[in-house]
Length: 362
Image (spheres, rainbow, N blue to C red):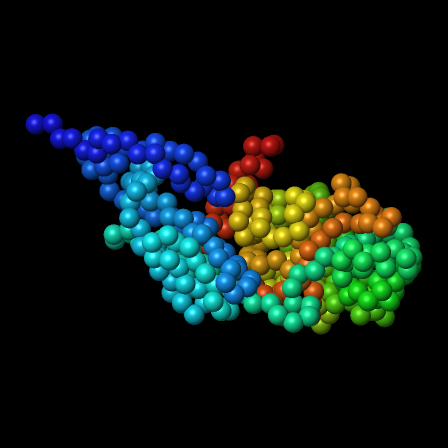
């Protein structure tokens, strides 16, 4: 006797990242004609941060059978572990932020379930939202009062100066402070030199000014140095900071390849470079490709350099990089939360994909 299982072809739209794709799926039967059974449920995105009351996030459940094939149409029920932080529509998976904190968003289909992490950070008061920031170097030259005033008119509120030439550094810091802006500084770490001395010299140069943070710029080619050695050198730089607030500036691809995705510095603020021209952190919270998203144990960045002086137009006649950044007077800017469960698995998966991609390029 022949058994007939699910003779209807169903066309549905399923979410994959931020794109929507169409898929034809025969519901009800596996390849051998037997009934298909849900075996795994994955919630996407794995990890989300919302920054205002009433903000929403659409979660999507991907149900798979034992072979890893998607099973559209399987009923899913959504719930939140903390409705004071975020509620979620039990039928649609649309979450809404209601207060600061952390909630686990769960999708269940019968006996299987999947989770996502949702954090709500509330910013209020002056200086607590990310600001438009520029960073400059000795190549930018001395600044004029008119150029800094022009920056202010265009919305710049924070300036990060390089420490390559101390005479230019102090002039740039002075002009930015006089123009009403907050300031940071950065030092490019040269691996073949003494890192502690480099950091010490940078601190000496900026000490007379109200610099909020010194960023340790880790981006030079690794050369002959191993990941273990480079991590040690960065630790030397952090140690040389002493009690002065320091952070890490880097790129995800460099960090994965050069430090083997070390998490030794996840307690420090992160300023990362990703030149997509977008003054937001969407690439971090909603990654679409391996070189987007969290790395190095950081779950929330302090700053993003979103356009470089190589491609961005000069700002008021000055060669600058464009950034969005939480200033040090923002208590949430340096917040580090530990990703859990699916969020941690996502972090491990992206690191593995990154390394595989790097191997393919060799």
